[in-house]
Image 1 (cartoon, rainbow, N blue to C red):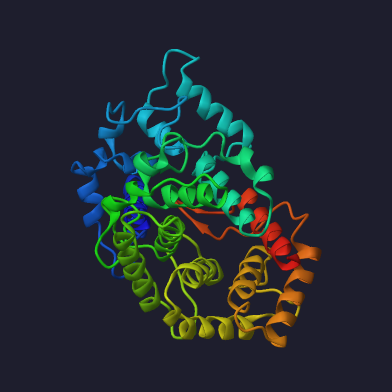
Image 2 (image 1 turned 120 degrees about the vertical axis):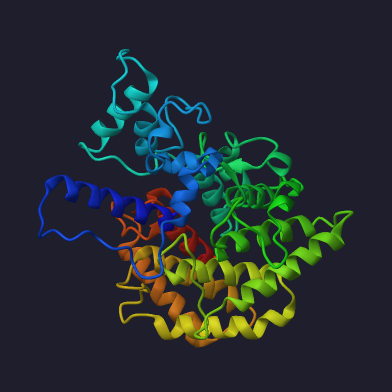
Length: 382
């Protein structure tokens, strides 16, 4: 997404500099290696893909009133900026227009500022349910989280929230959560994203995601556990994804991903999925991940890319609990204990967490972070 947003922002800044007429103000250049090719393609017609609804504000005049974009409760693409772009520069004559009311509410909630994303309700509910289910929370406690999710996800997929485009990552997260809660569906919807060596997050896709593939590996692995008729097809896909993920592990034992700034998030997703659903020959690679985690723990028991955070500590604790279960060690047990002590002191009553998630901006989905902390503590008690 940034490969289009940054050129659009640079273009906007340069246009304003030109209006100022200041000869000393030099236009901004694009960062090295970045072009405006994708932005030009978007404006040339690619914006008609439902995916573009979330970043409609960079499309230009064609976005105004575009029939291809259908607001949900007044919101276009789960985005205030996209909704404003769809409305256009002139305020609707009707003061009760749903989109206008949404924008005013969004500004009121943020004191004038608006979030880039207005909702991730389906992603959030399924992510939390799956995270806590695998930490040992009883199914009946988590069942209410799934009541408002899309119904036939196995065949039709799921968006991040109403108004978003349907995509593979959220669909896989929902399918895995359903399986963990005893309501599995065949993940047939995901086959359209099969790119051979790996699976795509969206169609089209600029850059593949390691964590999306980890989520899909989990969804396919859960389905295989039910011994389906076409098990060979699913086993083949699991093997291909596992190989692709192993090949993307960094030499130090970690993973990274385009949707999150922290390697601890990507490492948890990839390492845990490989441990649960890949073949035993993955064990050597995962031992390297355990060693990396043990080396990276801070003196106060936390983990973090820039500083120790509750979120990243929760991911590290969950990963160690999962991977070290096969070969328990005093060092890993002590690291988990120190990590949990940090979480108990710093992770349960924090109102604001660092913004580590990557979308149109860096953001911190509070409910997801709290669920990650709670899941780590509960898993450690099992």
